[in-house]
Length: 425
Image 1 (cartoon, rainbow, N blue to C red):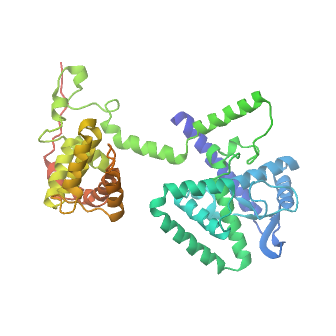
Image 2 (cartoon, one colour):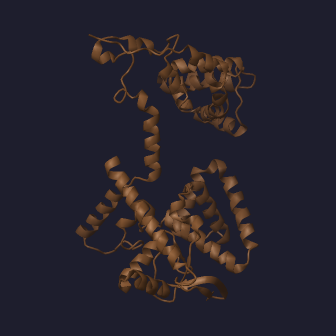
């Protein structure tokens, strides 16, 4: 991965810096592209430039012909450095009187702001309000998908969209038009419509026509070859975020990987010495330091280790909230139990933890309780998933952090053993 990905990333970063230097030079008041107020319908837009002026400046500055200059300009538009004030669907430079503006540096690719689905959902909700429910087909599909996926916080998204829409209406009309064009261009770059290629995915060096429509009516062989190439590129892309996450994960778990670090005191598969398995058995009284360290990586790691759960259970007992972990374990037992006992187990869990006056009652919100009671009419293995997820997140966000700072964990950490490597002759 390193030999293939990192050169491409470095190459892209160098080309991005070169692109930005060109854009900065284009905005120079003396030697750059001439900008002036231009009328768009009945609105005067400040600091607008024409596509013809952009192409002519690039042709003279880079000493290339008009067609190549138009391709360079289209590349800059595809990366979000220049955005159109008309014909927003395709980020290309036309060598005519079409109007463009330079994107504010806040939205430049080198800023590396994470592109969040929540922000995109707010943008689509705002457009839905402005357009009174009439969106582009691909935007409507994305809107419906995000509405379904983020249903739990959709009220928050709509509230933010209404606030932004209300604030935008208070701006002067030229500023409002400019901001709408800026925002639309940003999302065309980061959420390209179907049939276009994303500059953010494939890098600068692979681009020719940034938003060329897919060719219709081609011969079967050519179309199949084109589709295959598109699929290969999609499956081969590797974003910087993915690489950083992979490096972080690898560095965290390096000492816990038996292929990268030698198990202590020895590898039982190589030496016929079972001490390693004995020290790491499920119900061992004193865990190893490496095992305790793993509990700090994530809450999931802690719950996946039976010895870690025992330690966490002791902490919860002192906080008088042991019923949360007991409920989570009962739900796991229901998932992996036999089908014959499934209904009986589900009813027993409900009576123990959820029913009014239950001996180990747990606190869940009314909506989750309503979903759970409705599902229990037709019990199955995952009938308690909503309630289990609620309790899991409650323990993760609240109890887990306090556990890592508690005397219970510090005492376990202090007593943990660090086996020395066996010396075999």
